[in-house]
Amino acid sequence: MDEKQLVSQILSGSDSAIRLLISKYERLVIHMVARVVSDDMDREELCQDVFVKVISKLSGFNFDSKLSTWIATIAYRMAVNFAKKKKLDVVELDEVAFKIGENVEITEQEDMKQFILKLVDQLPVSYKSVLTLFYLDGFSYPEIMEITNMPEGTVKNYIHRARVKLKKIVEEHAVKEIALI
Image 1 (cartoon, rainbow, N blue to C red):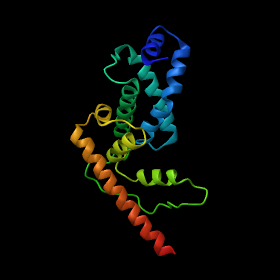
Image 2 (cartoon, one colour):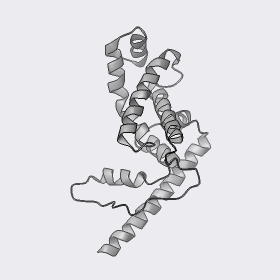
Image 3 (cartoon, rainbow, N blue to C red):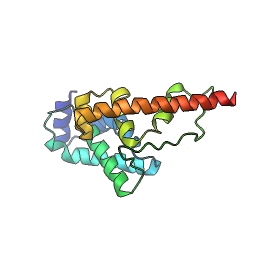
Image 4 (cartoon, helix red, strand yellow):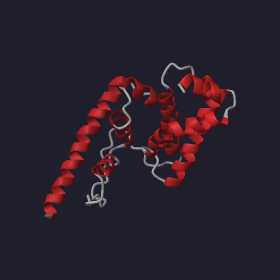
């Protein structure tokens, strides 16, 4: 079923179409919210709220972008607004504080991807969001611009800065690991 059919069926009141929408985009919404909100209970509630808003605003979706981009935009903006409202650590653009040394260890059982995601989580929220949208979710620059409401230059700059900061975190962690040997 393509996006237009799915939207049409949801707008006509199909519960199965709503379930299909949720199952199809659940991972994306969880990922977008988790990049900004760390508390499990808050994330779960916020993800539910995102889908309620998506379904309630679906009649206004005009297919100018992909449905996934539109849903990611709603999830991202709701997460940022939630974090601001709860006064969570929404890192400002030039803040360089990291949480280095919080027992980030690689064990034999731990997957390298999980380790890298832990390092990425140390980045400021703005950098982490665009970096994961680009590399993990595979969104293009125009899609990231739409989701985050940032100009293209800012998106590219944040991705560059995120890579530089991530490299620094990896190097610092490697130095700590070598010192332990």
